[in-house]
Length: 362
Image 1 (tube, rainbow, N blue to C red):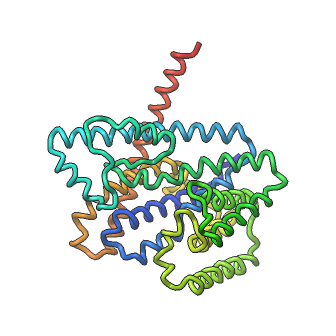
Image 2: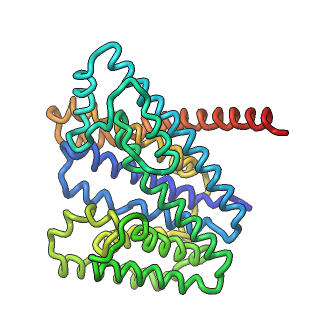
Image 3: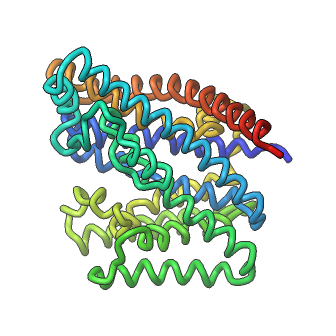
């Protein structure tokens, strides 16, 4: 079966959007206006959950194998990150001083305080990362700040495939249950659960709705109606919450509350409208990113941390919008280079694991 390049294209565009979001919300806190940072959330992480739903099936064994491979790839990456962060601290303490390191880390702003600068490796951090407890990586703070997506993806991928496999005739009931839970949590915020429940209730609904859309196309006559509903929801949001809710969209993202859910409807609608309608016939730069989305997602955390130092050096010397475009382009280039390196490192890590497997096999 031929690969659907639209899916790769959509993943690539979503990844480029995530890079822009992290350009705007991390180093961009120093110079990008709040309005632009909020608008960057129009095409956000919900797209990845929808695309996962479209490409997922009811094969439990295949899904679990894919998740296992992703977990191992993730563990290879965070092991590399752990030693990179540790050796940088050793380098700083050996050839400079604690004050120099503290000055270095202050570039990221007071919000991202270091968790422990020492020449003794903090092995518990690596163990926590393996188990998806994302304690901060001091040298690359954006990496762990963006990994909340991965934990939620693992959870809803498992629940999603189990529902598709064992309750194929009741998928709509599960969608309804997730939407009702999300609505109840928002109507009664005092019972909104901490942890992953709030995330999974909403994003699992997106995952399952997208799976129901698999192979289908929104009728052309229905497109204006769908966008009209989205517009009406946005108008209601600003009428009910007031215009100041615009500046609080990101605060309503963790966990997803009604303002953020409404804000994400435009991107999700556009994804489904173009699905099976926009034909991508040739591979290109964007589809390449989409095919390697996980490596770009890992890489952008590193690149979005590195561009802080360019921002600090240039933010007083040029208009904010020129600096934003420059940093975004640099961020993409760095992510492209780092992703290529991470992919080679991942291949090397798998070869080591295969070698160990052969040596230890009975």
